[in-house]
Amino acid sequence: MRDRLIIADALEGTVRIRAARTTDLVENARKAHNAQPTSCAALGRVLTIDAIMASEMKDESAKTVVTINGDGPAGTIVAQADGAGNVRGFIGDPSLYIFNHETGKLDVGAAVGHSGTLSVSKDLGLKEPFTGMVNLYSGEIGEDFTYYFALSEQTPSMVAVGVLVDTDCSVRAAGGMVVQLLPDAPEETIAFVESIQQRMKPVSSYIDEGYSPEEIIHELFPDARILGERELRWHCSCSKEGFAAALSLIQEKDLEEMIAEDHQAQITCQYCGKTYVFNEEELKEILEKHRHVEDRKRFPA
Ligand SMILES: [Zn+2]
Image 1 (tube, rainbow, N blue to C red):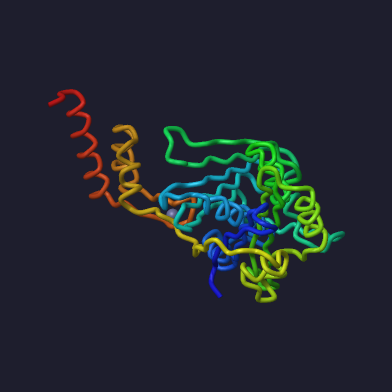
Image 2: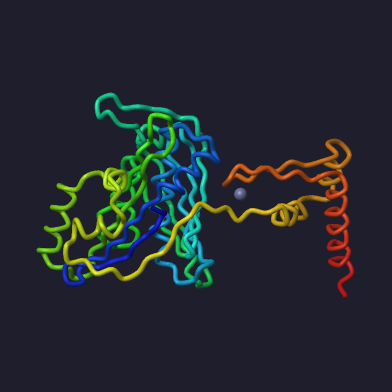
């Protein structure tokens, strides 16, 4: 089975449902960052919800960026997903393994922290991106997004998200589901969605049992109509050209210093951990281009 996202409606069109399997992309994120179980679960939950949010994007290159700044040891968590199903992200401290012995689960809330902020920036093709920010509710991610959807987007929602980490620390199952009430949803719809919240298993359990996203939706909403689907994947768009362009923006004297002292530059992509090396020759080329641009600024044609 592959990572996929399904969009559906149900209860006579009064709820919109988006469910995703994200096992492979979260496993790839774990490998890219060498993330330990609790960091992996925290990052995986954020990546999953971001992938679900980005599925609203009509434009394939439009991006949704989620930034979580909690007061826990995990530090900043960033996820970026686009309208084509590409997802990438990172966590400040990938080395956390915090276990809650009372619940028998990984303690994501303790890693993220119980206070701080969750912000979302959506590129909707308008001049300015849409941005929304709320305070963290519990740091467990699912509840925080429920709170975000209610406060920032005025959409009552049920959010379920989970990452099941195996005994060898690899990702065994990951997925999420967001159920949103459409405006004027009747009382019966609200009661039905609340009953699902009470009786449904953790979403990662369904994925682990082999349920596809549409099977999860049909299990919980027998009258659901599938409206669309898309593939999801871990993908970082970084490139050597991209970092060369970034290097050409730094101060000329800093570039000169780099060449004279280090004879090279190493840049590591924050999102995927890939390292790019620029040798002396390449740095001189960037410096030349930089000077050329500066001259053009001084003597505009
Ligand atoms: Zn990268």
